[in-house]
Amino acid sequence: MFCVGGHLNERKFTHRQRHHTILPSKDKLTHLLVIRHHNRSCHASLSTLFPFISRNYNIQVARRLVCSIFSQCMVCKRQQAKTSKQLMEQLPNQRLTPGAVFQAVGTDFAGPLYFKLGPSRYRTPMKAYMCIFICLSGKAGHLELVSELSSEAFLACLR
Image (cartoon, rainbow, N blue to C red; front, side, top):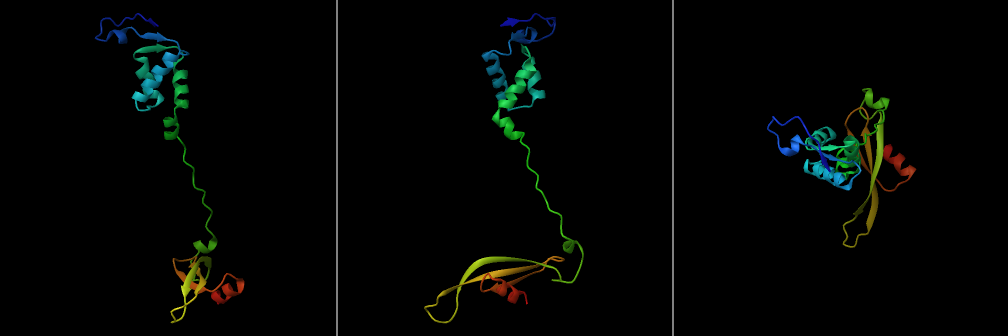
């Protein structure tokens, strides 16, 4: 390590600020020093960390070293991660044009639902499904109980 002489003797700076320490960029000590300053500055950005280091040290090819430490830091990678954008499908025309209630509907099934019929104590559970009709032009909904998942049962429910 060497110290650089300076012309800042008249100012009220510390000895370290007047005489910067020259450090090679490929040295392990330099690497650990930059990591220490990076962690102490709470993973500050390059524009914040670089002047903080160059205030006391003169590192050869310092910007490249600081950038490589940023690229290796997992905390900085997580903070600068890009969020994925949600892809949205275009709305169908039935949702955009006004019309009568339940003129255009969307359907979905929920279930199975288990229930017991009859007044007796030893009832057997039966399986049923819920058919949901949603009006596309408004915010109306209708629920219908369906006995099975077949096209005949759905058409009977639709009628």
